[in-house]
Image (cartoon, rainbow, N blue to C red):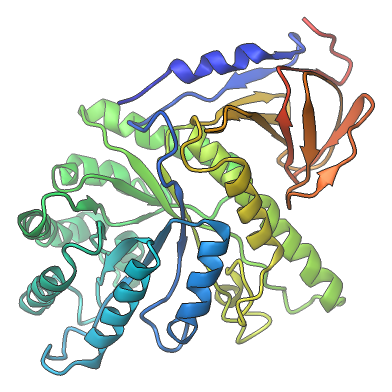
Length: 425
């Protein structure tokens, strides 16, 4: 159920009263404590991408305590099921994930142009039946197709027409999945961002009757997420329904523009910026009531320096960590599963998240969306400072510089900030 009671946590935080202040509010039904909230996307069934690296990727996920993995359940609808080696690839992926204890989110395939699920409905339903027979007890989360609003644009189909086609698939899929295993959680088609009012159209078509989770994607700046979440919440309120929301793709590509002159230096800068996004995306999303967030993606293919799609991974092509991986690992260590849902307060350009871990340690995270902000900081009680990668920092005597690179404070009973020329209340 929606819980607005988390705001009381900020009674511990005293901040200058004359600055502009905003407190994040829970917008969707969500858990009070984080429940396996951390996920990644990986191309585990694609032999030209991540499938050959599956074992190494599982090791990296386990090392960081990432608990969810999202991947494709797919095959060309023109092929017959009998003897199809793609099923053996999916079998291998599901088996390895299960053995590693990963919770799996499987994406049902929308198909290629001319082979869309709604144009190959008989083949789609046969494949779905086969998948359910094999994996109904192994895959707890099933996504009914990826980013169909983008696929509609590629096919030059209006959003209205596309939703008519989608609703020819979604109700039957939902029933088949629930009949196979009522405990399976069905997510909507993942929606690529909100500006094209696709959520609004989905709501008017009552798609929400046939999914358990609304599935959303955004590659925008983390601090722009609240506006997008608010739009979704407004649609739900207007039409009298509500569902939990998952952000199943969000990421930052560390690719370089071809005009980059200093390749090594520019690459490091881009990879650091990618790392900065990770904790901000998760902490903002948690504070607004998002239950699960999936980073896109686990591994960079790195086939080309200048191909944006090749550099979204938080590890390199050989699965060695990028800075983003270490930033993600640090976040999970400092805000582990079972922590109280983080709260968030924004004072001018300074973001302050706060939560309590299962060990009852209080943790703060401070950052700015861009630029730096020098603030006076005082904390009562025993505490330590850590950087975005978990490195122990020297305690500032009084002033601290807040930047887009998150600073964590573990411990302390009361945190007091003076921002700019403002004074304590």
